[in-house]
Amino acid sequence: MRGCRGFGENRGVERVPRDRDGEGRARNARPRDGLGRPLPYGRAGVERQPEGVVRGPEETLVEAQRLLDAGKPFHAHEVFEDAWKSRPEPERDLWQGLAQLAVGLTHAARGNTAGGARLLERGARRIAGYGDPYDVDVQGLGAWARDLAERLAAGAGPVDPRTEAPRLTLR
Image (tube, rainbow, N blue to C red; front, side, top):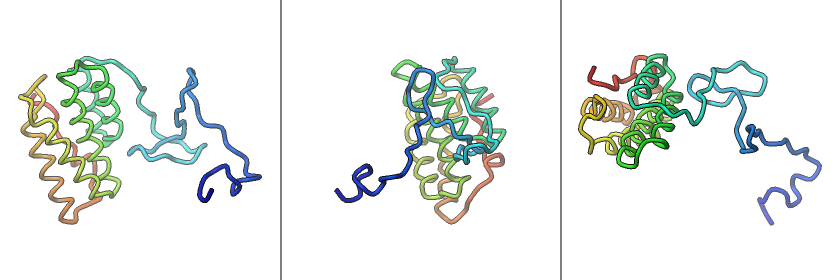
């Protein structure tokens, strides 16, 4: 079979075991930079966010804002991902939309302007149906995302994630 791994072309190549967590699930243990890009094993990276942390809405917003302000939108996306997986069903689109905004900024900072613009627009649409739950500045975030997406589409980028970091709440 052409192009299929394990059918001839990799004979004699030593297979590297996959990284696994304590429960045996596949987890990439490679160090990552501040924008979440994998680095070679053995290099110093940025500490990763723990997965599966259940936080309340306010704690989620405070932690995500801290990470955004530090220029770590990829890490903020992981905090929002935990919220979207743990919050009640009616709120999940809000948290998923916030995660999309953070990862859109991540892509814009990495230089993937087309992907960043798409994610920013998608995230803005996803949160638009909410009022301002937990004082999330839904209208302001939508305007921020649309503005940055337009600038990316016009050729801006890569952007500085610290200077482009949005304010998440009305407070």
